[in-house]
Length: 165
Image (cartoon, rainbow, N blue to C red; front, side, top):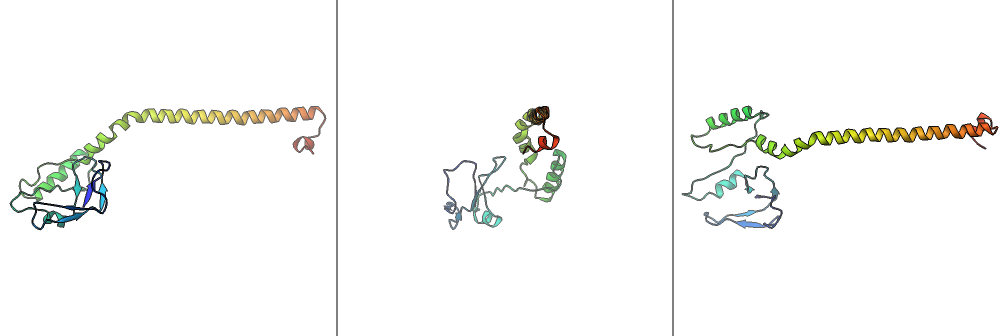
């Protein structure tokens, strides 16, 4: 079983066992990992075979299925794919659908507000870096010209100015 890891600890440790009561055979599951649900709709994940083992007779079975559609770039495409899946399943099998687009929009909403400011700050930083480097280089060149001028004025030849020996 993979458990929701967004709680920040406090739950079963990796490799520990969880005993499920109220199910024939009282199955034991081993925690093999931790995952995060962006939409916070899942507390844990098991294989389809484990779902069948965990089903108690006489209790209606409810299973959340996650589908990955090949075309899911817009809400319209997701709605069309969900409708296609719903037609393939028994009537009433689909009780709800949540798109990753809604979760993505919610998760990136604050980032989209800050993006222009981050870009503007980066451009200002780049311009400042160019100005500083240009200023340092021009200062070095001017200092070199002054040194050469002083050395020539005291009578050194061009060869001695370049390589004072």
